[in-house]
Length: 300
Image (cartoon, rainbow, N blue to C red):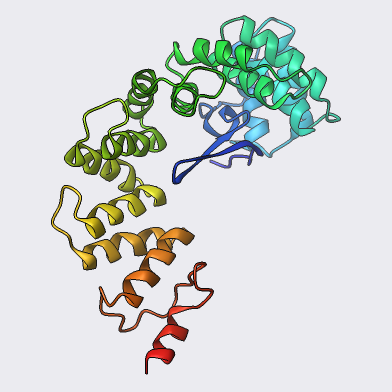
């Protein structure tokens, strides 16, 4: 199914991982409409789903103007998901002129009706100061409301807030509680961060076996920083036999996805004669400004 790309508005560096929470992320993760197109759509739910079909180009030709019209019709019948999507469209300027104030108003209405997707997005708007004064307290309130309904991104971001002391006092135990909820809902970023807690003993007894277990869950889903972190365990012999070749294998998985620090680590392994560098010529190292191809030539 075609899905529109939503502009990411929060990109916060966390330890060695990047938190990338997309504003209005539900537009990328919304339920598939799978709508049977009919001229007799009448209930707000049916109208909304038809609008979603036009928005996504699912079973019909993508048409933002038609989607906006249908979302408006359903929203006028007090249907919260449609109000949320009107906010999305005003925010993105799809089918209507871009208007952050109207985006905020529609999203706030949906949030006040208890719609978790909108509650999370409203929290993001308070975080970013979009059409409203920045307010970390309100951000926390809205994230918590969404998280308590099982909204994974909100659970993960609450973990970040307690972990990094963003608008709240640092509390590793609370961070872990929220990370676990998000991880059990499939968040590989949360799984990686739990691994980091166990590796470093943040709020828990240091446990390299548990760190590896959680990193592996995230790495198996393709998260490059988790692959990098597993490489670090093998390079240093934390909870596993020190194995530079295995470390290289994990670093390479991360480097192949563009993880620069993983490339740096590979360069260091080569320069320290920890691995056989035969055929390794593709990785650059920020620390030296050289490629491994340059390093090999210098050593000849």
